[in-house]
Image 1 (cartoon, rainbow, N blue to C red):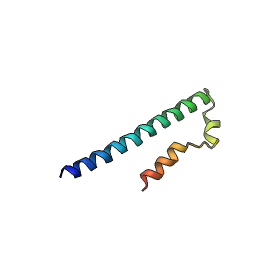
Image 2 (cartoon, rainbow, N blue to C red):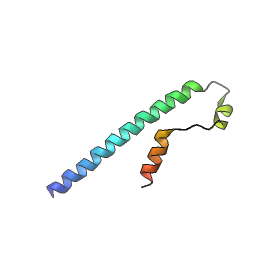
Image 3 (cartoon, helix red, strand yellow):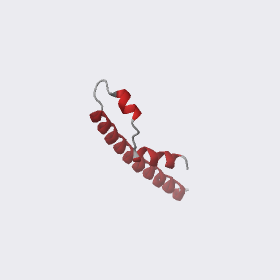
Image 4 (tube, rainbow, N blue to C red):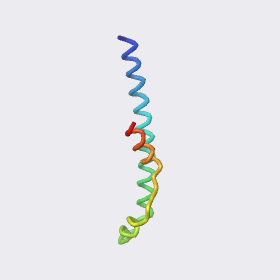
Length: 64
């Protein structure tokens, strides 16, 4: 039973690390977008495709 608990703790620690990195990447992306958007330019920004590698990677990870 002890080894099972230790394994689960390891899994949780790994997930926490992944989510912490994802949060940091998402905050960086948010900051970058906030700096690019000016009042009145939201429509133009919405029509321009943007890529966020952190979101794409996490979508793939959650889809597993």
